[in-house]
Amino acid sequence: MARQFFVLGIGGTGMRCIESLIHLCAMGMFDETEIHLLALDTDKNNGNFSRLKEVKEAYTLAKGLDAANRVSHKDTFFSANIKYYEFSPNYGEKSTFKAVFNYGDIQYNHREETDLADLMLSDKVEDFNLRHGYRAQTHLGSMMMYHSIIEAAKSRANSDIKLFLNELIKASQNGNPRVFILGSVFGGTGASSIPIIPQAISKAAEIMSNGAANVLKSAYFGATLLTAYFSFRTPSGSELDNQKVIATSDKFALNSQVAMMFYNDDATVKSIYQKFYMMGTSGIEWDPMKREGENVNKTITGGALQKNDSHYIELLAACSALSFYNEDENVLSQNKGLIKTDYGYRALNDDGKFDFQDFAGQKRAEEFARKFGLLIAFALFCNGSDDFVESIRSGGHKEIQEFKGIDVKQVMSLKDYFRLFFAKRNGDTLIEGWVRQIHRSAGGGDKFLFNANLFSSQTYKALMKTDWNRCLYRSEGIGKDNSYKTGLFGSKFNSFKDMFIKTRDSNKEWQKITNNGEQLYKLVYDTLSKLYNFN
Image 1 (cartoon, rainbow, N blue to C red):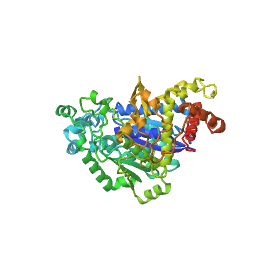
Image 2 (cartoon, rainbow, N blue to C red):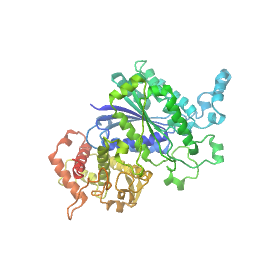
Image 3 (cartoon, one colour):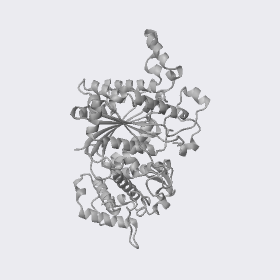
Image 4 (cartoon, helix red, strand yellow):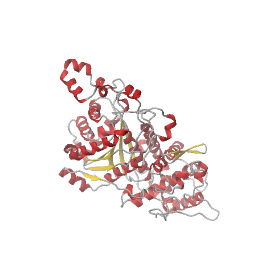
């Protein structure tokens, strides 16, 4: 039976961390797992929110078009069964603090309450538009987010967050679910929410279950403490006048320092979380909107224009969720009983190069290298010039007729996923996908896990000429011996096809899967494992 895992991504950084987690699922790092993903942001039109939904949609449809028939698997691509939910506080009609809390009426009837608000919040904070997030105003954001979640639980209307909470209620009544929270501590929405989310969802679950569920008591909680790692242009005076409040990256380092002091000292927060994973970068030079630079002439506070590129630290954050998921039950139980929080850190090499163990730890480094590399190879065979998946779906290979029944929409969703994962073709030009953005954020060249040639190609034609059969990994470390050769007059595709047929005929594990498309993924996974000498 599949294990369950509850993950919340909060704010813009949280959206990108969930995106990385979905890619880990596609690699097969969450075998036999049903993952409940809740994307939580005030800015539902945010560009990163939209991209996350694209990745989620491509992943889930690639597993099958009927959600009811999707299940988790083991030792294959797309092994986790993802159930996705999203929640955004409704700031459509009431978009400021004063509007949400009926400041005018309360001032008339309960002046002491508005006096307290005025003492804690400046005029600009009370009046800025909340639709683009809490803009580093964590004292406001914590209160607003908690209030929004409780109101959603009390509402008679159906919503994604209530569906998520219903699953969490069932899991908490039958065991000890694991809940992991992804977000930053230096910005607005994530920094506001990480301290209060466990209490908020527990109170909401209590309301929905009429007091029968106690999530705080039963669940194990973990979270990232993700400090500043990027910067953006400084707002002009006119922008500040117009927007009232704008988060500025020059304050991120101070925000991070204050946040760490809070998490080190606050007894309430430490009593709830069993594991914290602390991570950050030595500087904040990374510009997440560099590719959009020519189209942006103002400070972007949110909305559709906020399309931040992915960063390797978001993959590191997703890997911390994987670590928490695999943590020994006895460790978490003991920490909970002793009201103890473990702090996890990750140190990188002095030479600036990233190794697989930096992300997945020593014990799972080889597994991570294998599954990450094989997914890249699958992406190149699927969206490459040979287009293996579509060709056998359409009956283009007379030796392979078992997969003609795959729905064309499932195949197109798989191809869409790989465009988002690796690169999208626009004529002969390549548009960076997630993994190529990650590579660039890590410093480019051979600093990130795989052979630099995979990322140096700027055109589709050049990429297809890359010998990823021989040079998928770097020439040192894990993967250096994992490659395959072609015959004197053969090609990497022909060698792959020959091994695919041999694998199909010798191993019938793929037939235990009911979805025709997922049968194919299993065979491709086993084929690539053999070709790259991982078996």
